[in-house]
Image (cartoon, rainbow, N blue to C red; front, side):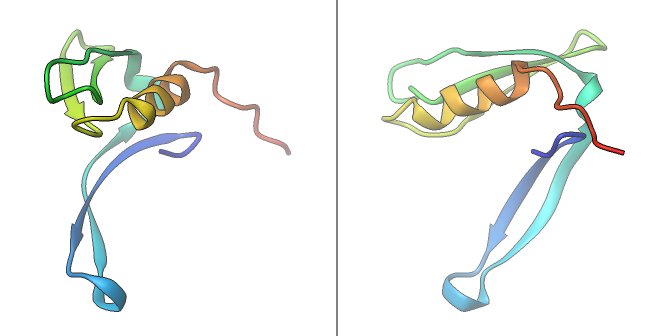
Length: 84
């Protein structure tokens, strides 16, 4: 995630040959909210709501909620002001 866009990346390969490909992206202004919605063996599950009314859930970790909390905080915090 950047201050302007939400990106979902897919990792390919391992070690030094690992590459990443963008599989989903949209402006951050299209995210209307986010909440951690853990389930058994999906403690890191996050539901993201969009301005068009749709919702998408991602699992950031099975046993730990730390990454989920960080993602929710980042998505729900105010966008930092850009310096001129």
